[in-house]
Image 1 (tube, rainbow, N blue to C red):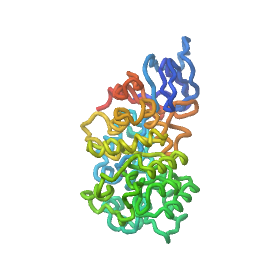
Image 2: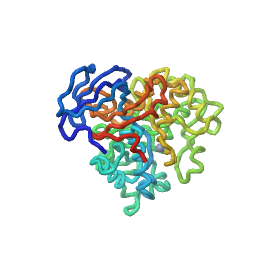
Image 3: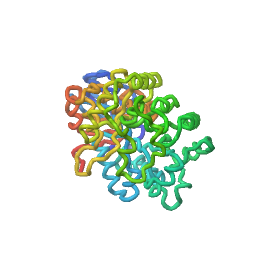
Image 4: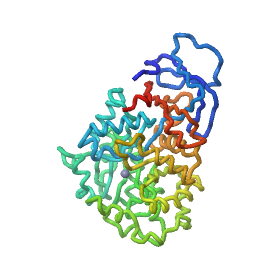
Length: 420
Ligand SMILES: [Zn+2]
């Protein structure tokens, strides 16, 4: 694949319409890049650039920041059983404009290996930011996925899966988490809010993000938010704020098999739920106040579930809760585009976000969730030029994402027509 500009050389992107990822649009602009960084952005000039400078003429095209999926799972199974299949997903992501992903749990040894190959351009893929999982002692013992992802050393020695309890050594646990090369910790289930707060405070002290399920059980989601976590995952977590149901009855919450996963996370009676309940409203207010990001994983295949989810997301969106685009699922490899396209398109077509907001959710908010917003997530001077070029305007029709022509990442150009 061709490089845009090697090392510290200059290059120019010419005549492009910028949708910057932060709700601003700039028409007919030039970008000056040095290596993989954006040095300056200015109105397109009708001047000839010197021959020594590489110019990429994108007159009339649309430029958005690289897309970010804030909830992926390759580390639990795919990377372990078939690195080849995982690499096909990496490739589809990159050629579809996805330049960063948040990997939610798995074998850190293998994830780190793939991350390295991607970062030195040995294989095509997005930058991978991964997590260390914390769960109840019961979960650590029983969860089938943990056994697979700690093969060779045993769950008790895998720093990427840790037991959370009131007697734990918090600074040591977080130091072990950091030692895996992870970007953040993830609260999964069976951890009370007091321990979540201790872990989160220490994680922040040691430079890690704190990520969590929206409801971790036994506590309600608002307690998780008040514990200071940066991101909460899944719409269903908000159900448990409803005063008519009680999350503490779900303890212990353990995935011993996937068959009963839905029964474990959904209340028994969904008809009691109200997205506009006063308590739910207070929860969203607290998220807005703390800038807690909702990694919604919205576009589930079941229309009934999605309809219920929708009522919660519309309430949250009205209040200004920050939403990021996580998927929690992977398309069959025969599909041309990855699942994050469904997520972005669904958020717009179901009237939860505007086109501009959905692009922000899939770019800048994703960078915020991962904690890389200083260098990624928007098209601004000084940031890394991870960007996507579209033929059509996604502000007119969000499906224009599928008119992708190329992805620019890490100073390299990946042409959609070279995909497959
Ligand atoms: Zn997940």
